[in-house]
Length: 298
Ligand SMILES: Cc1ncc(C[n+]2csc(CCOP(=O)(O)OP(=O)(O)O)c2C)c(N)n1
Image (cartoon, rainbow, N blue to C red; front, side, top):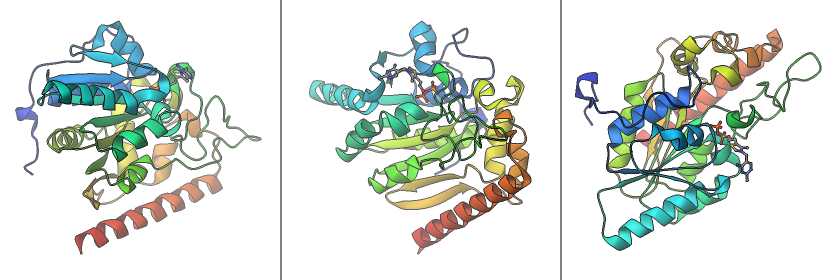
């Protein structure tokens, strides 16, 4: 597929400014960029979270359905089935849902919509915690991150469990298209949204959306952090198409993981040993990913 260029991007906006989200919100950018690609023949589905707060207050220029927290996948199936019954075939049915609504409370409905093979796109806006209610840990919060329910300090060591790997869980559901993305790599993300819109069946994209409030950094640094996550290999960019995993961006000289961690207050409590442990885990994760990509080439 030819790469998308900035010149090709439409000037139309479907995500409106002046909404309720914080300055420097990563989710806002993720929503704006995806809607630019999807266009006006789109129905947006969301559930409680930062994004529903923005959308209910008028940020969406396209039709919007907001339902109960656990029901993202069920709402997608219902809307897609209704359109199918009416013979409407040119509308994108797309969910934008936070990592809590995806990895935890909404996982059952997400699993079901993918297993049943509905023609929908599910975009997880991953800010790595339940940010709209004060930054509690979610299944997608990374190991050792401090949140309001997993404090960091000398006594408490942040989250004790690793980040739940939803993209690979979705790939194991045999979804025809699964991808990770970062708002720091906007064209890569938009290309993935465009590709997803052209594939029939359930598509899942998880886009990393740094959060200045929950992660503890200045609001001007959101894109920088979204890029650092990829440059350090903490958040690798890949896609899985019909079961074949392909890494879509490889940092030639990866930056040390500490550069990413030390830029955020949620990792302030980390010791040198913690940093070494996290670097090792990132290296191991990357090696595993490379192995999967290599076996897909064979
Ligand atoms: C059944 C239910 N439990 C709890 C809530 C309260 N609630 C509203 S938004 C939210 C946090 C959402 O977090 P996430 O899905 O990660 O999205 P984010 O706010 O980070 O974008 C919670 C816990 C709710 N609305 N419904």
